[in-house]
Length: 197
Image (cartoon, rainbow, N blue to C red):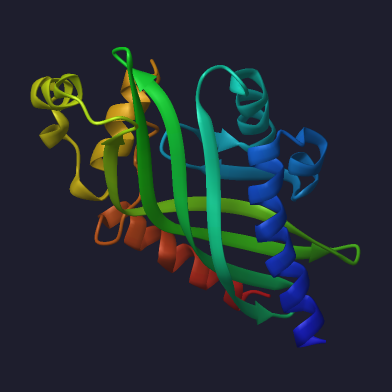
């Protein structure tokens, strides 16, 4: 039944955000089928490795919240594509200054029904726009941004990239955004996969 299947897929997307933000690692792992892959700004690769990184970094000074909007699900048999607008809200300290990052974008998910259970098989984050704000306005924040070379990053994820590097990580290229060749190819691949359902 389409409605029940769409609801099951939507629930997976919503459950992912809650489990990720609350440190529910077993629940987070259960959202993907074995062999799943994920691509976000700071990680690209096997889903269990992503969860392990999240678990290792949880509670170490960076607070993250994934605010998810309603999910658009397209079904074809045992396959589904889900597209969800998301705001990623991060608080961390950079150069001794507490900052809030707001990054807006979308999650594109390939979801498959196997043995009666819908689970994700691939997720890609697409970045659209972002901003960085001080928790408490100060001249130190303005000075920090003035010396930061944020212009070297594409506008859709400029401040996300800056905060990733400030946290000692490297970007997991290609970081997806609309109009990037690799991102447009990803969309085509997802659409072709859905047709095989």
